Length: 203
Image 1: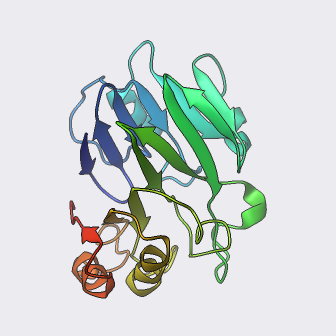
Image 2: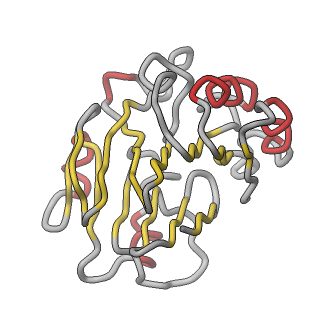
């Protein structure tokens, strides 16, 4: 499995299939996406222009129920928080993704984080959220979390979350682009994460 961070929370995972999360600011047209997961409808997470660069005829989209009117149709899997399903052979579990001390991502909206089992590893993509009662007790192997602050948890809170859920690997995202956070927030996050957890800075 190879994980790439593009911009913000734009993630590409190369495994038996090509999996994207929240494609955004994609430089080249590849039309290689087997599955595209969308966490919520904000422009830096749901970009039709960028989706057009990676989608192909049989791309499967996984979206929150609140986005059905934006992207519903064939090859679309619609999920609510706290659901489990199989998508193209991958076990998928949805985790509510929301703020607890900000107004940008209310819990009642139904935005999603995802845990996807890839090559035997449970990969958590948090979406835009703070540390909260729904994500602070999950069990995962790889956690990709926002650290930039303002719209999401900052690097201090993100490190606190990681130190509680204790994945094997933690990957920071959603910082240093669009004026959100600082380019060094990933390094600051790494300094606060327990030494027995591997931090990979991919941006």
